Length: 365
Image (cartoon, rainbow, N blue to C red):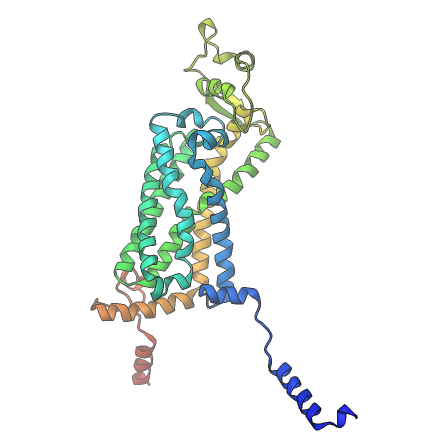
């Protein structure tokens, strides 16, 4: 029997063809992930991953540093442990690390839209207050430790102070705006603050490049106290093994005082050179690279976040409309502009929601 002339078989084939034709192709994984996380645009997901992934990776790699004696002492820039191992600076670095490292993890869910929905809004608020508190504590630790971090040069101290002021001001503005239901400005200031905090991650990329360049040039020097050098000579770290005090005396005779003891008050210029086994040279290279790198990356991150905010006006406008209705319901003056908007600070015209704009334009015509 010829199947092509069988009406039942022909009907089944037609039905199968219709099903295949009507079946839509499965969306790519990135679209599924974006939808699950609450991102309305696919590029927003990629921007989130581009910024969140380095921050999370950096934080997870630094979590072992919370074991100060076992891990931090062997891993940080050569010479820093001389100051961190006891006293004021030990408390300072502990306060800074135990407060700021959790922020690198807690900030990630704050920028996932699905976790800002009504279902999870309580988590978003509590997590936000926890981040505020930890950043403030971490900033206090940074101020306490900045005199000795990576040599404590004026360049590094100045940028640490500026970053503390910037992030504190940014969080204050974000808090004020959310209290005034100005959601669009709350988003803008939190993005700025997190981008500024993230400059330390980029700094860790710039520093090795700078160290390699300084080593290649070969004639960069850093002044280091002899007491710090003597400590480095005896310390067993990831950078070098302990060495004989005689080697210190031969390489840096200025550090040898009366009776062959280390002249703790003396200082010597150490060639900045990255060579495993040469902890003094490695420390001499890392010290100046930190301040320069942090200045550069803070500048770049400040530009980057303003570009991002300028490229996402649709999201800002959407949040401003939500702000308008929340402020109207709360009875705040100037709904839509009750926070730190440009209408309140600059010479921009009055902002109106789309419905009112249409009404005004209709009357004008």
